[in-house]
Image 1 (cartoon, helix red, strand yellow):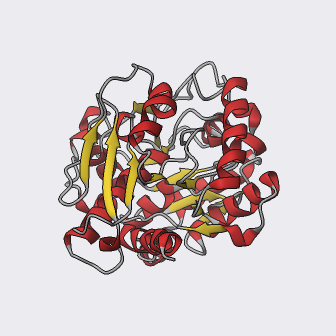
Image 2: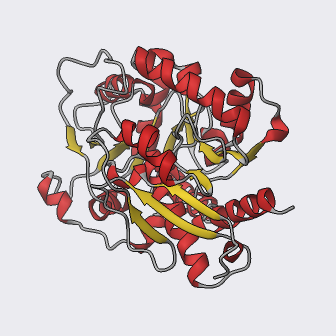
Length: 370
């Protein structure tokens, strides 16, 4: 590789974090970029790529992207990102794939995920809101390219940060990552499901996920209802406390965080994924479910109509009767479920990580060319 090529340093903070939505995007884009380099596809080879990781990170195996673990640092990933990373990336362009980035780096590209700190401040801690509002404003002024994961996020961030639409580049995430995973059906026995039918809900304990309302809507079903499996965890340092039901209604099974093999098995056997979020910058779980033939019930809110198109059964996320009625339709209407399975597979096929990586490469090369 010629020595004069610009080095793109990738912010590897996400490789030291639990995998939720933004970390998933960072991980899968990283792997897709590496595959493009390994295949010597045009565009990526015009740049040199280095992943910078905190000392305790666990990056995936990469064929062509160099991996560097920085020396020193703090146990705080935030301090690592703000103090150590800028020095390590000072000789090139820093690429931030998981939304956050260092304040002091001027030459950087960023992929922002949503405007929740502006639109949903009540869902986060005050310190989190103050910091990220300031950071996003700074990144929006200086980052090249300035990318987002959806047209919805482009519009909301553009309005909040007063940045014109033409400055934003939309890169839709992919939906094909679970295709590489061997499913682990043992999760069904671990949860005591056996052959019992169940709904599935996937998401963190973010108040915007609307899980308390989902539980109330579920409780309104007849007592012979299917089970409801909840997958996901929380982060008290990020999300504000929300008022949840004192006790889950009968039939609810909390699985916590699961690996991809177990999650894939749950998608494959579920009656439907229930995704009643009030706010999403993109929303990966509906596309993950669609790709695996799982019908999707989604909120008619935020980015979800953009992502799901005509392949989901939509509900009003603020109406408990709307959510209850949708669950009843899934149980009773086999033809509807078959339609949603077929439409979902077709919809998900249009979202691939390789396409996202190709677009990202093109934008980065375009920025550095004279």
